[in-house]
Amino acid sequence: MRYSREHKQETHDRIVKKASVRLREKGAHGIGVADLMKEAGLTHGGFYAHFDSREALVIEAFAHAMDRSMEHWRKITGEASPEKRLALIAEAYLSTLHRDNPGHGCSIPALGAEIARESPKTRKAFAGKLDEMVEMITDFIPNVPRKAARKQAIATLATMAGTMLLARIAGSSELSDEVLKAGRDSALGGVKREPVKAAPARKKQN
Amino acid sequence: MRYSREHKQETHDRIVKKASVRLREKGAHGIGVADLMKEAGLTHGGFYAHFDSREALVIEAFAHAMDRSMEHWRKITGEASPEKRLALIAEAYLSTLHRDNPGHGCSIPALGAEIARESPKTRKAFAGKLDEMVEMITDFIPNVPRKAARKQAIATLATMAGTMLLARIAGSSELSDEVLKAGRDSALGGVKREPVKAAPARKKQN
DNA sequence: TGTACATCAGTGAACGCGCGTTCACTGATGTAC
DNA sequence: TGTACATCAGTGAACGCGCGTTCACTGATGTAC
Image (tube, rainbow over all chains, first blue to last red; front, side, top):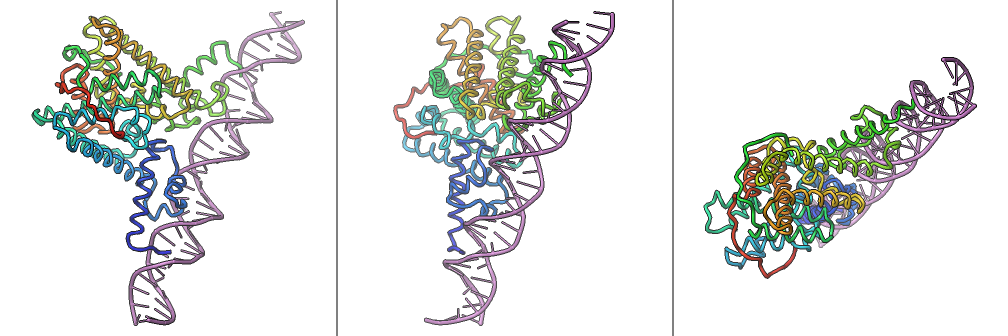
């Protein structure tokens, strides 16, 4: 059928976009090539005109998802005062809306564990995007030396991702709401923590 | 061959034990029934004498893993003073040893996202163990009203699980070590956080 | 402008493979007498 | 104590199925002349 110049790129982008949603919803191995193509209104045979392998699509799709997350954060913090930016992100991240719509949410709690087990190529692509995200959050923390800000950015992202993971394990129960609330207060600095210093002992894992 | 009375239970436990390691290593869908049985020194045909389905084994295996984690925590905090208990757990949890040995580590960062997408039965079983774990950590927080302690327990567990997830995405790179360090300091209260209060706006997800 | 040919995104059948599950069978040991 | 039978954990072939990938083909449009 040979289409016009931009046509292939448009189709490619459509596959990536739809895949990025379904993969976050169903997991990195939760949906097949045929269904992903159907989502884009195509049949499975054409897949390899666009991607070398299923894995290549997974990489593109999650990168797209991470970019969209960062774009979203830039949007919601755009006009806010520097002091409020991180709080705005945490509020949006730790919402029931985000919990109940993994397909349009952050890839870390949705796909992180699976991607960490993929090939080095895939994992490193994810790690690169993670670093981008950390850098971005660091920029949202004002009046703190860069190194300390970056540390706080990592801790905040870890708390947000971990909270979302726990909230989704808990489903949409009372526990789940309790988890989101605890995460919000923690990310925003509301939870008292013990001023205990690092312990000397270091035994087995866990 | 008909074995002695305890034999079946021993075999059953061996399958569950080995599966709990391999599933954490490879993911909830990362290893098949035949290989799991081979791990236990058996052939795949006998599987259904022990479990109704693969899913039933997954439930037993992750419950076993969570119980082992809690048992381990009880062990490492056994003789410590109440004030040091949470720190001991965080130190052990946020170690490179734990990061590099998911098969013997916490199921939440390893299997959480996948289990949250399973059948309601599987997810609820996980949610129950999660609540047990939260209760246990709550008990490790002294001198704080129960409700506040529980909130802190949830936030600490979320931070620990999220940090481990990020650290594994980062592999064993410099970023990964940086993540573990930030997580340790955060879980132990060492990271300064902005005293910003919850924002009013609440737009889309992410 | 018109015509012949080349291109290549997309189609749909087919492939090889591994998976979860089923099933007829085995044979060492428990049990009944 | 000895003998005949029942039991059932474990074996290994087979099943149906869905997956990622390949491939010969299509046909609308671009390009060369």
